[in-house]
Image (cartoon, rainbow, N blue to C red; front, side, top):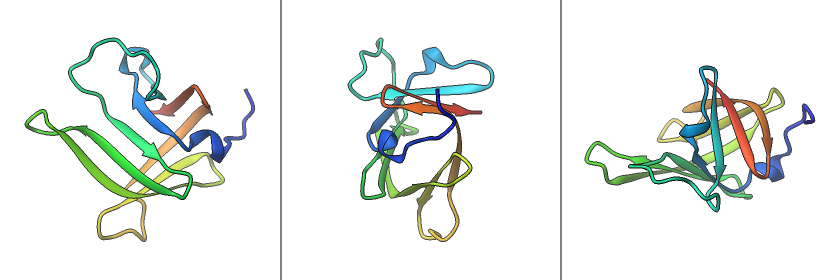
Amino acid sequence: MSDKIEKEALAQHWVHSHEEDNDSEMVFRPASYQFPPSRGRTSFDLKPDGSLIESGPGPTDRSQRVDGKWQLDGNKNLLFYQGSGRDQPSRVLRLASADRNRLVVKK
């Protein structure tokens, strides 16, 4: 796989495939992937226009949603900007690899 991460490959709805995680990496798959049953999964929808919808199970097991913006920097970091202080990223995901079918994030 190439070292370069293509922004176009990232622009889709990603769901955590925790069954594929290991000690150093987390794996995300497109929402269309056939996941085994799970009590709840975190996900993020990276829109081509740079908007972001992140969701996951909340404290009462109901899904919670947070809107924001996303961008890919030159160091293969996926930056999430959410909440009132959008001048600094609220979350940084260090990408190990990415293509249209699998997104791997370093823990």
